[in-house]
Image 1 (tube, one colour):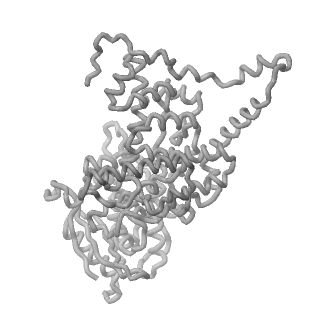
Image 2 (cartoon, rainbow, N blue to C red; image 1 turned 120 degrees about the vertical axis):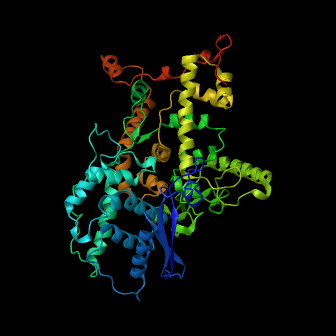
Length: 527
């Protein structure tokens, strides 16, 4: 087996948000980036070439030594290593190097956990010296990242964690319970493998009894009128996972109708594919005649421009066997995708020879694949712009034409924002939850929701959407009661019934008369 050592950093392109890798102009500086290694491992059952890599290391010499150690573990002809003095950090390097069959996103997650948490925190300790209290201290230090220490010097352990993310501003926020649980899972998996191998000098997993926060699954909540009113007053969300009502979903789609990626928003809102599945969808898997889409691949966002990480491409299989699924498309979605297909063909003709034939259903105007993070950011900007337009109309009195000019949007989109009422924020992933709620509103069938979303079990669907579906059932019960016409009620009905009704939210939408251009006497809107 052969390998090599190379240097790279984790700087990202400000536009594409992808890692620059070898293209970073600061990579030649001695204080920038880190050293990595890459080498071949035995081919898999298919005979396909496989490679693994790891890093960063502070010096080229350390990377060379780690490469030699890693090659020893995969080369049966090499001498048996003496592991009594093996450090946890060096062991993790060997462990990840031997994990050759990991999905790209899983490998990237393991490498991140090791690079910015496990190796800087505990990597200097011998494998035989690790105890459960070391992991207790690590998780405690992780919870202190990004917090105000009120003039106190950070602990030795916290200092090492902070130094590991010195060149990565996005990693300076305090990790939550979910992140700590995932780091613990990575450490436990690595140490369990060591326990099972006679060549390593430990017989119990020291991380097994470490104290760690238990992540709590957040259930999706519906943006009801009282919750929207509270959000408008305070700016606070009732839950990290919020779902629009059908009316709010329609308001967003009306607002985004002329956005270039409207077909993507429409597909996710109605049929609920995951972000990676949507971005990774290719035209051969879409049959507009049969009105179906087959979600087979998941775009993880891993940049395949540099093969130093040994990744064949940026695709991986869908999340689970249930995720690999055929989804039926409604006629509206088919029409939207046909219009999009025609637009994409026109863009291809206009681009000419420089068109990038990525094969994907959703692309940039030149055919390049979309970046998953870029899609989420574009969605966030659209939702925020909706609220900004409503605020500027109310507070500054700007009319339709002024708002359309300022935000470079059609008048019809601005009108949709003003006429459809407030639109509280959700994450792009929550648009998938919207598809679940719409399907349940229409079918009252949780099994249909499970199959649409590609959940591995109906229990997952129930755990996520219990509260949401209870509210849908309550709304359905009220709607059913209103079907029966009544002209005479028992004495005292009005006093009790009216007090139990939800507050009227109709005042949230501006009257059409408020859309007339105000007399602003040449208002300067900063264009």
